[in-house]
Amino acid sequence: MKIAVVVGARPQFIKLAPVSRALRSLPGITELLIHTGQHYDDSMSGVFFDELEIARPDINLSVNSGGHGAMTGLMMQKLEPVIQDHKPDALLVFGDTNSTLAGALVAAKLHIPVAHVEAGLRSFNRKMPEETNRVLTDHVSDLLFTTSSDAVENLRRENISDDKIFSVGDVMYDAALHFGERAKKKSRILDDIGVETKGFILATIHRAENTDAPHVLTKIVDGLEAVAKQHPVVLPLHPRTAARLKDMGRQFERVQTIDPVGYLDMVALESNAMLVATDSGGVQKEAYFYGVPCVTLRTETEWGELVESGWNRIVPPSDGDIEGNILDAIGTTGKPIEIYGDGTASQRIARILAARI
Image 1 (tube, helix red, strand yellow):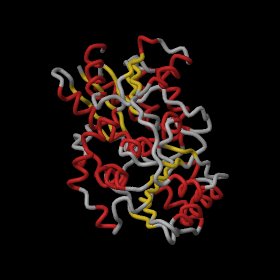
Image 2: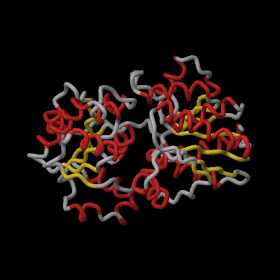
Image 3: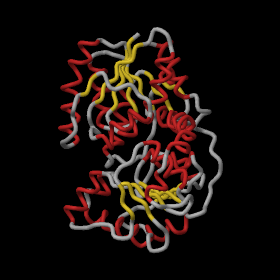
Image 4: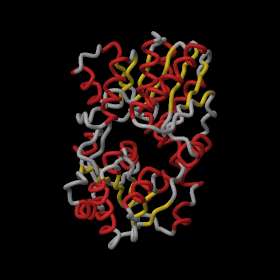
């Protein structure tokens, strides 16, 4: 059995690592790894394959720029002949990026079963391109692997049949368990940047709705700068954010910006921070995995259970009190959540694929 796996963005490499390991452990399964190129430089892509021990992609489509329509369309154009040539038995996608949607649409049109990891997540904000990607991917998928009961209910409300839905747990939790100890042993990032355990706030900003609106990005910069007067703030600077700041003629002065980091260094930063402030979906969850409170700089989140349990709070960056909420959230804890599985989601996915395809 041949499983084509389409990835393109940094969070997908993290999800891929345990799933790929599980697929390759089963006899009779061949993995065809296709990288769309969505994240293409070494800091955003190459180093992750090395640290996560993922096999290098069999095919790289090298689609790494353009608007949503242009990027998704070009990915589909390049992916279709690859799928036609290799004739996989199924195609596996992760999450909610343009790469996810492109892979799902190509496979569905070629009548190849689509499997979607992290199915059923909803922010209920259709202004987010990721929300459109999630919904469309779910509705053309044949196997929908969910992280929680909330995701299952979202799919049922959209009239997706129960026989397509599999509640397996969260593959990011699998990765956190597998690589957490390795990060403790191998990462030297805290020493390299001169911060102490539980002595700094980690921030990440990259979403288009925050970076492409100058007034919103200004509010975020001002808020983080104000926080940095009281506590060190470390910000791995995403290329998109760096470019927008340059266009605006702004720069961080008190916040310590660093280059994008690999996965092990990011785990070390997340697990040793006193608080995480982010607009990333994956980083919200990883903060919870390591018992670190989180402030999400968005108007909503697809991980509502983290807000309900008290581990996360939503702060709309355009009109929320960023400084006050971050300072108020330091040291808080939430209630335990037992919905992300037991660290074996990847093995379940591999076994279901082997049995159902």
